[in-house]
Picture 1 (cartoon, rainbow, N blue to C red):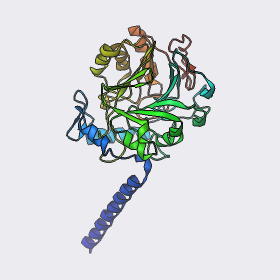
Picture 2: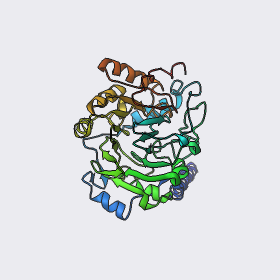
Picture 3: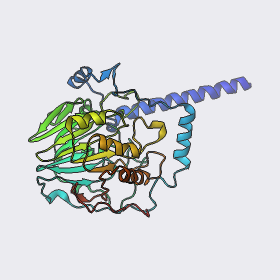
Picture 4: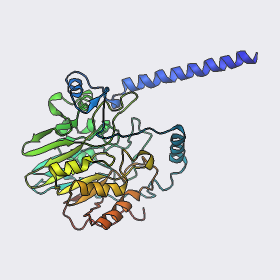
Length: 373
């Protein structure tokens, strides 16, 4: 009798698991936010890439992202039960302005939206970089929510832009709701290999998409755009890890050179980029969502400062912080450690308030606006 009951319970649990798995797969296939796998000409170009081996993209140096079961359980426990200092206790102060009427001039201006989302104005062009402007860095709206801001990001107030540059397809960088709202006001999209398939599924015409491999370049009128290496990974769902490329970006204008690190662990690619395209007038460097367990794909703040030195940046700004709780550190830890390391190494660092339109040479950007929050 007991044996029959146990068998029935086992069959019931197995049936539940099967139904749940079918439901998850159906949800992922139907829901547009997961994007689409590269195919056709996109897939052909991927297969020709030197960085694509064994049916996935590879980093330039060995990069382990594996974690044993014990480590995974510890991280999950800490993420769930030890988060008192991982989020601000008050809404973050912001200085959002309506940039639609602002005229871009020959000297660059930038507006930071938190995390890695930036509006760059350079040589008369307006370029949005990694425009994750939504409220959740995940495929569903109820997890990984953005920190509270005193005023929310108004996507409608963002001007028509000449270009959007994307570093990779993770949800905290490529946001489906943001792309849907912006796509008809974007002149062109520039992405690493494979991401064009996501954009096309979301209604972006293929003629408006340019994909680049590492070290490939293109032009936006007189601007040169170069996709450069990063040390990271990609994927938006089950079974698509590293099927699209990740990248950092070099933007070369008439008078200024700008570098955007994307997401990256520390590696020799920073020196290579500095030697090929440096020195840079300004660099936006990943600094946040790190942990010793995944140091290979997200730099520690001290490494962020070293990387900015490697690329030969005259002024640097830490990004990838102050928007989402994606790691175990105190939410202000990235900027505090970066400022301390920058002082030791005599690196020029600026820490603009979210929403503020600024120049890389603005000497007023040293206030510690995050303190007390």
